[in-house]
Length: 282
Image (tube, rainbow, N blue to C red; front, side, top):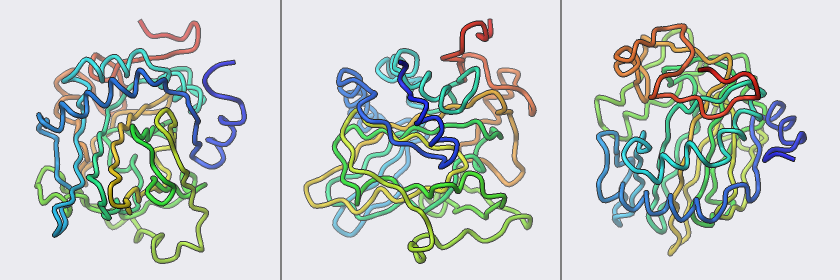
């Protein structure tokens, strides 16, 4: 049997999310923790401080760190996640899109606002998979939360502008008049089927890029949170440059390597990591 059971594939299709237990080995966790330590000391140009409270507790973010350290590169190409994502998406291929590293210092209460991923991306498609992988134990109260079934809601929501958190002009994204206000998930929690779990290193939450998710705050004193998130796309994903802005905005680097709107992802920037037998692109 492979790294994903048929029941997981069915749950991912129906709910837009599945929690896989123990699918990432301890050796990968150790490598990624070493990479995170390096990135905290040497943030990339995409590194951001999302929040710092009056007690100095911080929430930090960085992205596309895989191009800076061998620990991340090895994980992208050699860990089981490429195959896991491909099979969950029911795709013949899985291309790596980008990574996101999240670090919250002990006791941080800041919660990520509920949002969807794919409407921000320089890629459009239903066959997408984000993997949220804690590198330290995390309790259910501090875990990422996902609204089951929201990946299939036929509505374009006005997403949260994360530029308001960072104050960085590079992060500004606006959503047009063809969107509707985002639902008040936090204020009306009893109206939604919200999933979260107690997790250990090696567990992974995989969710569709259109699934509504947020949270992962409310840390107890003495508990930190370190997460390595990878994004994957499948057969139907295509390049798109959105007039409202993108976060992260890949339009420049995509253009530089010859990718145009409507293209499948590829090149060394978005490598094909896994494919079913006979489907690999040369």
